[in-house]
Image (tube, rainbow, N blue to C red):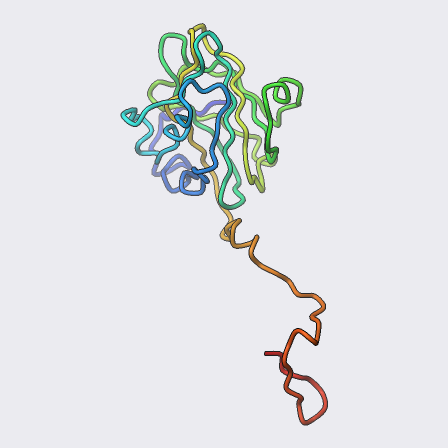
Length: 204
């Protein structure tokens, strides 16, 4: 299901306040079959900049329209919608399939695996369409893989913007990874001060 922007974004969830752009771990974003290595990073930008194409775009290799885009987040997110701005003259992707929390997917995996959700797409040259997710299936998303199997007839698939709307948790993933829980401390690892009452001791 796609949402048309025929309303005031201030009164709906399409304002920049809902953009998950700042929660994308951009350094780890990657794509398979991109014609120019690293160009996938240029399609992630602030909502207000979605029609600014001066920083480049993602394009598949000539004669092969398939693209696979891996997007990790710095914290778990809940995704309400996805927006894609593609190229003109048949270069926009015609279908999008999505996988959640699956790292290392290649084209063979994507073609054989059941997607969490998929959409038939139309040209969205002006950034006015959003594809609504089945929200209950897009909770606690650590990473998302977007599979674009084909386009609308062009020699290559071109993507100028990928955006996600939703909510992020407050605890960032790198912080969680550094927390160590010491369930059974070894007394020999700590200096202790005996409590004169014979009860508790203070661990330094």
